[in-house]
Length: 586
Image 1 (tube, rainbow, N blue to C red):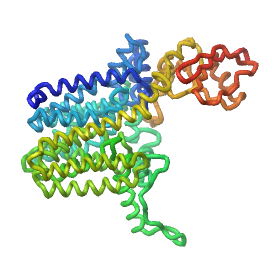
Image 2: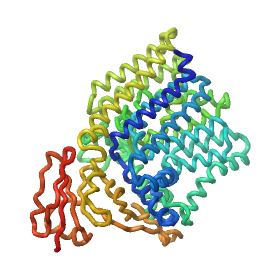
Image 3: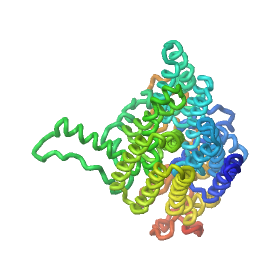
């Protein structure tokens, strides 16, 4: 069996992952921001169809390189969330195989590599993003390309191109790992300042060129979020600096109740708290962030996995330096700075996901190498146990189930440390237990709240494609939103989207005057409040018909009995009803 897994295990696993991904497309529903990215891709297709280049249009707000292949596919298929999600599934499978190759090089073992790949796949955020069009998957792939270039000692130019791809895929991830890359180059070229400068230039020049082209030319589509971090927009960097304020950065976003860590209260008769009180309260707030479930849990990377990996990377750093393992030093620096920025900046569950491959690398080192340093292994376990136990006080749902899951993993850790003759079996059991727990959590989420739940109750994408059939493509409509968000705008090819999304460029930026909007607005959101407001919307947008989707159990507003509206159709759909209302002459 072991020999079979060494030779065929990865291929069987990837086939199963592919089948799982394709199966999940059957339950497809827009999630988080993937419909926004889909709209940008649709606009990209329409711009190219008109014979223009995409540089001046609103297609690069969330990167453009990984959307371009999908935009080209849309020439054949038309805009489709399923097609876009299938592209991400392909990128996800490539990412898993690339991680396997990296682990195989690091550990010289197919089984260790397979174990780490399974851990990555079964991570909650991986599976959550896997059958979607979210940016997490391209960002993961790009970070793995960066890791590949480091482990296999590829040229700095290739490393730089990988960082450029990461900058386009998810700009903040590149910024969070950049300090670690700088330190990696510094230590790998130690003693030669000329090489340190030259290698840094090679590594970061491609990204710098991309930013310059984006700012001063019409070649690269505008990423307003990226430029806002550089102070090129009207608001400067104020928006981002606010996210580093302790009160904002440490807020517990796990639930509406928002259990917070206790702080030192100032007596009412004292006007302002002392410096020491403020200082200790700030420290307590950041400790709280480490404990809150929205930071580290089975919804991201559980504390029982993250902290052993993080502490292992730091404890083994001196060993890596002596062995001149600059690749592992690079991973340590990248993980450290990513973790530091994650903690001091406003962030939550899915923000930690892109660094997951490095976390799982050191998870495996914790099991393989750190176990030989019994004192260090035990110290890490006790520290992690203390953090995990304290974190349980901030859990609000399924508390006892989470206690049981964590105790099971801790039990296996301790058994792995003390039962030396059973380590191979316990290692296998430990990795499978973590993987099964993580997979079970995300599948329960899909069923209880996620895409499977939405499909069972409302149909695929709330049956938006079926609803669109009741409206002409060239008519202006008002449409309610039962949960499909921007999907109607995508399927009706509403291309009215401003390139300066959320942030306006400063007046001196040369390309500002060249930005364009395709226009063609045809779909507007309908929220009925009163007849007068509805009439203003209808007149202002030149509306010909209204689509009012009522979910089962909702109150039905009888607004269409006014003399300038006429109920045209009443269509029964899955647990909802579509009312098609014709606007008569006003």
